[in-house]
Image (cartoon, rainbow, N blue to C red; front, side, top):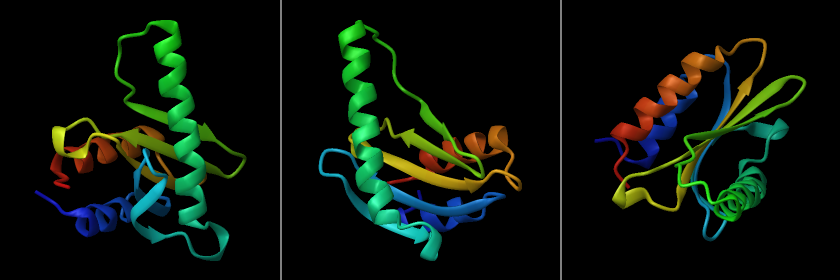
Length: 123
């Protein structure tokens, strides 16, 4: 089982990764971040993407959809932002956030690798 630091380091090895965070969407706080730099403030991204997750969860409830959200994809001109909601008992209320350079990333492979990281993560 991987801890937060190990999981985030592994996420940053995904081809095209710019930054990653583990976020508590009940508070909007990043429990850990890696990468980002000047171009991407991961703490701001964590707080903002918390609003995205809350809105989608609320919309699913209003629609009466009884499905789990696997991930949420936001496509920008030069980046993909991938939000993966965690499902285990110990990680309920958390999501992994991954920013990818669109020119270098393979979206299908990034989703696969993020799912693998989720399965190995112990919070």
